[in-house]
Amino acid sequence: MSKKDKEEKDEEKEKEPKEKKEKRKPPEVNVDLYELACKIIEKYTDRFGNLTRDNIAVVSIFGKGKAKFLGKCRPVKSPYTALLGADLCYIIEVNQDRLEAMDAYKDPNKKALKMLLYHEMAHIHEEGCDHEAKGFRKTVKHDVEDFSECLKLAGNKGPYDWFTKTDIPDILA
Image 1 (cartoon, rainbow, N blue to C red):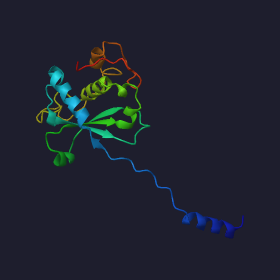
Image 2 (cartoon, rainbow, N blue to C red):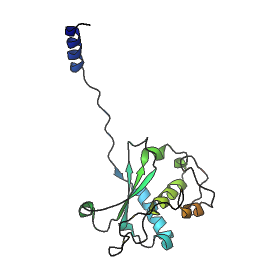
Image 3 (cartoon, one colour):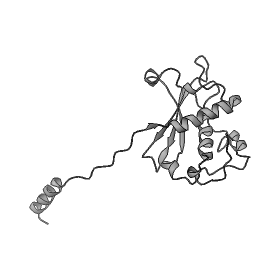
Image 4 (cartoon, rainbow, N blue to C red):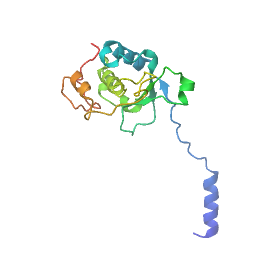
């Protein structure tokens, strides 16, 4: 191929419309999962007594299907507190694409989602919403592969493969 032919081919390529990458859907507040998280706070006051409805938010994120995580618990720090309010201490991110691929996601009782929310909320430090405490807006790492308290709630049958497990107990029943 001559240099001139190559230049002409390159020019033709430039004229062709380029394929647009599909834009990732922006995160959305997930009201249904937020309400489940609030029920967990109400039922497990001994564990989550430091939390109120105003201290957490649940957000669905999209376009992270290859990511391995199902959920993440993130502390809300400056400068975002100026936008979101001083009471909001934690945002729980839920990987919606990954969740929808789970067998357990199809359960109408949402047992896996409840356990996932409990798990993510277990990352919240017991002083996480106390503005005066050292643990303010801190997170806690796992004490085992999962949290031992989640395994106890599940009847010590774990560690669970939350992606495929379908016989998860209903922690709000």
